[in-house]
Length: 208
Image (cartoon, rainbow, N blue to C red; front, side, top):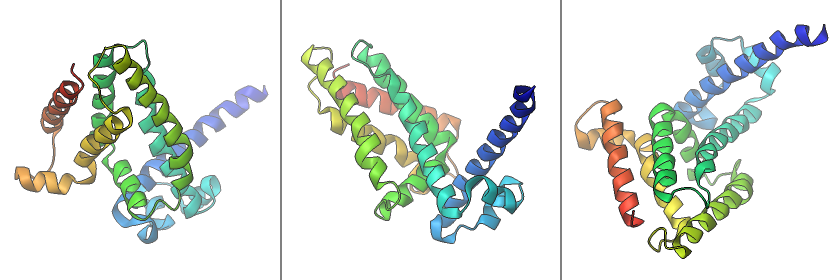
């Protein structure tokens, strides 16, 4: 009886939190942390301002939650990079996943970039712990591929830096990309063209 009563409430909470996080991502991307307000985020989410405070307590807590969600979503695509995986397939899937995030969640990338440009006051600990540990683990996988002669000699850590820079530029610097390409926005075909280029370019650099 208790489980039946709690299930819908839990679903509503998760749905509302997802709405708020999505709206906050957009507002923080456009206004920055300092310029964003809970009122603007509430309006963007379509929920009462009181709901934001109920679920997250403050703008600071909500901002941390947005950053944590962005990092979590970025780390998921690395799961396919394992020693026994096919290097070509694993790297291509990772590059495509990162480009898809840049295409579908450009605001998330902008929020993250803004945080780093301001010295990463909120995520510095995450960078030095979670992100560092995962990057070291995946760089070790790349080195194992190199040692086994499965890919050309590359620096695993810098390979990931290169992939991050190449994929996130289409979100963080979309204005620059669009200006050079003489168009208003980047469409699906633009992202596919860019993705094909990056996949081919990076795989060639890995001897694949």
